[in-house]
Amino acid sequence: MPGIAPADVREQLLVRRAQLAAVMRPDTGHRFVELLQEVDAALERVDAGSYGVCEVCHDAIEAHRLTCDPLVRVCLGCLSPDQARLLERDLEAAARIQAGLLPARELAHDGWQIAYHYAPLGPVSGDYCDIIRPDQPAGDLHVVFGDVAGKGVSASLLMTHLHAMFRALVALDLPLAELVARANRLFSESTLPHVYATLVVGRLSASGDVELTNLAHCPPLVVAGGSVRSLPPTGYPLGLFPSGTIETRSFQLAQGDQLFLYTDGLSEAENDRGEEYGEQRILRVVENTGSVPPPGTIRACLDDFTTFRNGASSHDDLTLMAVRRAYLA
Image 1 (tube, rainbow, N blue to C red):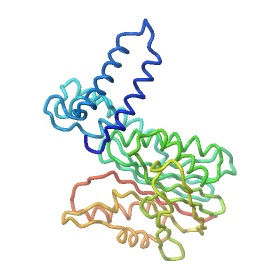
Image 2 (cartoon, one colour):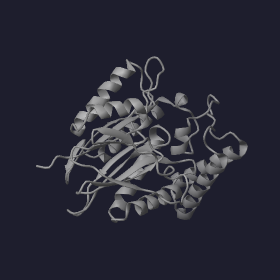
Image 3 (tube, rainbow, N blue to C red):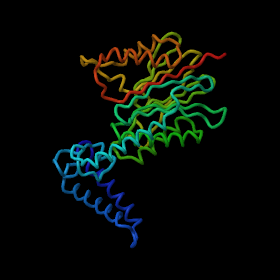
Image 4 (tube, rainbow, N blue to C red):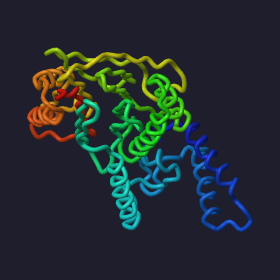
């Protein structure tokens, strides 16, 4: 049962069993009874030490599938044709839902220009990218960008959870540190102990002021005054601990200055010789783009990335975002 602690599984199953038992009635349909029996069988497998082992080939079941559905009994390779088709349809539906949550690829608002590139490795992604417009004309723009630990469906479910949570919290018009502290507590309390996300959360004002917190994510790059600098993390990953102080940093971007964000699908990617792309190469590419509009920065980085990889396969989701203070007419 790689990556999943038996105590965590037991707790999750017991919670689900209690929820089922609470809605059971004498006239409850047989499906509820069968589901309760499946939960009990999973608890027995935990006690016997066989939880997470495929009942057909006796190899380990994929950890991300167990995270999504703790009642899974067989690995992907042992699914029946009907089960495989059902899983494929579910993945297609999940991909459509996730794509529908993404903001417009290019956005202009209150003196800001933003563009991003979002490329899942598979049908769904654990990368998180959102641009939240204010409800009021005088409100600030919020950017939330990061990466949920894990891959595939389980990570995409958590990404969807974060999307809904931050959208609800931004509407409360809280100070940024309080907003992120609440998000951290909610995420920690509503997920399993091993779940976390690295995030950059920023508030952009019409004056060009930027307030930002970096929760153990790849260092954002600031291009200003002809030079580029990286912004190191200010805190631990979201959800790792339910409480703690959220630190933010504030700075101002002048007209033409940019903020560049990326996930580790860029910095940790390797070429055909096993060399890592790395933060320094990203820094040089972004610096060379100067004050071009965000779509140009994204294209320049992707072109250099493609050249560097030299045909090597991708092994992670890839997301980039460029935020530019526009030249005012």
